[in-house]
Length: 225
Image (cartoon, rainbow, N blue to C red; front, side):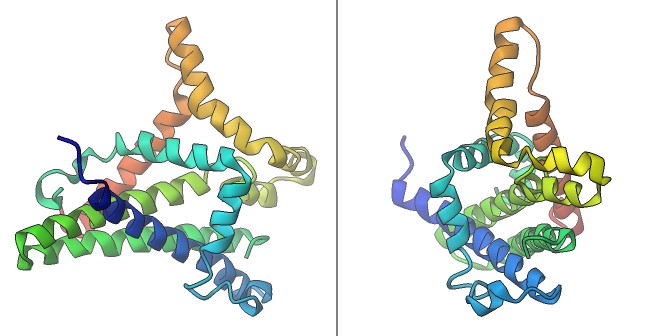
């Protein structure tokens, strides 16, 4: 039986918008704390406007959309633990770590929400549980995906900031091609490996294992195991 598309939209769009909006607001807030008030003056720290740079970037770079979508799908494989009790500032490395932390905090908040769904009517509880589950997955995926050490992702820019200049400069030059490389690592390399009879889904496994481990830790800390 095909799931109701409106229902699917509500249980995915709300977690996506929440995760992206807080992540993008954290960009501007972290930069403001570190002395760059550009985003603050432009209103990008407002949760009403903070999501716009992200969506503009995804529209401008279809490879980013594909990479993130593939990452979410792959990392769901490491999130099977949701059955049972769970029901189912741009230039600053420190700011990038804060943004990843923001998504982890949101994932923790979503996981804590599972403790309250038992007090709700069954239909509402099921809908809220789906939102909370997707909220945990999406926020952890966004944190892990953005910290992957390849520019222009946050992890790549952090790495550029800590590498010696002799290594940082050539590594930074990969930024215009980073998302194409990531798509290759996530899609093309595993397909090639399948044809050769070799498992080359190294990046996919890394993302899935990392996401699964973090989700397990969050569920344990929030008492959902």
